[in-house]
Length: 623
Image (spheres, one colour):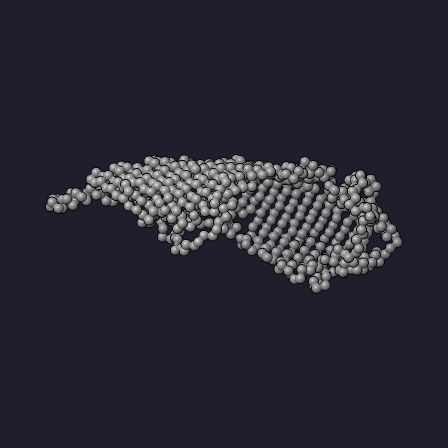
């Protein structure tokens, strides 16, 4: 408000002084003589020529006014022939009699045809540098510098009311060329229309402009309209029916450009230090966001934000493509139906998003996210997913690959060429050491790499350089998965530990989904624990230690019947009739084994398989 008081004080002083001066001058001085003196003194003080190519008109009663046309300020030497500034039309008037009643009443201010040509040459010199003048600044009298204002000073402007009939600014054209940086901007067709300014009365405001830029080459068109209402003390400012339109085209944007529309209402309470935006709407290509936001505590320097936002259903693929990002997915229909709703609250170092609801195609996600401190950060989150098929979101298979794996191998996301193992660069684990997180993800149904799971639970925890996924659980193929992973980055060489237990898994359906063929059936149990450290693949394998146990019961190997082969061989030896082929599979009652891993070497000493016709024992080692 101090700035406003100074402005009103200056305006009042200029009006009073101008009224007296204009009244006297109009009686005793020739306007053309004054114009000549002004242009001569302006050039002497600034180094720029001043030309007023139309008669100067002024009035005294009932309005103290000034009317100018065809005013030009010459450019600095070396910057071309175009004027530094030019004004086609200026008209401003202040009503005289209301001043006696401490009322400042300004008629509609009209400014048309403004041209500004600003430039900076390769040496860094600007063509407007001399406009500040070279006059000597008055030094404050001894003892006055830094002296606080006396009580009551500055209140004069506050005692005056202010009204403005309106503002009409049309056809402002600004050229700016920076030869030092190789940049050029052209602001054109700027207009400002302001309705009558009165406290507690809606004021129509319209602003528009066009902007062309050099690097990158872009063209922008901006239009704004709203109704502004202020309180008598200007402590409250309301913007209703706010509408902003932005059209952009050019380098880095789609061929047909980008159009954005912003709408809403804004209420600013300076005394309470509060800002509220309601009926917020942002619409553009593949974007439609609605909501409301409020900010409190502005006067204390500790803003607190509350709001709700909603992203209406959008095609995320198309939106990303506008930003130059193209996503190829196995299912081309995914990422085309995305929407979200959230409520947010921010106070100090805390940010909470609750509730959070996301729709991703056929998937529903809901939960909450809390950032308890930006330092670290400290994160708490919980997300619940009803069902998702991640295979649909993976890159499409390489040419020649089908929906099922070829030759009994799992499908891969594209072809991988030969790679050369490079020594990894040193990794800065500081961000992970600072991370403090506790997050839980639950998924009702999950499909990934064609493996189907239900009741999936993943818990992430991070504290002081130790990041863990524990527990990780799921139900799959009539069995159960329980797993955990631990990453320790407290030192520069990370330590990795992992463990998993699969119990009661039906191997046949699992292999059928994974490879497209169920060569092996039975009920399986698998357990393993491993530990390693390092960054390179070779180092990780060399440091790998652990143990495992595998057991398969009541199963069969399809495609070969060992018992039938033995019967055929026996019949052939005895010269007997070869029996008809039985079911082409080898049944077994049990297949099991355990092993240890030491420095990357896998050792098994108790392999055992029992079938109706034979027993097999074995051992082995894999390096």
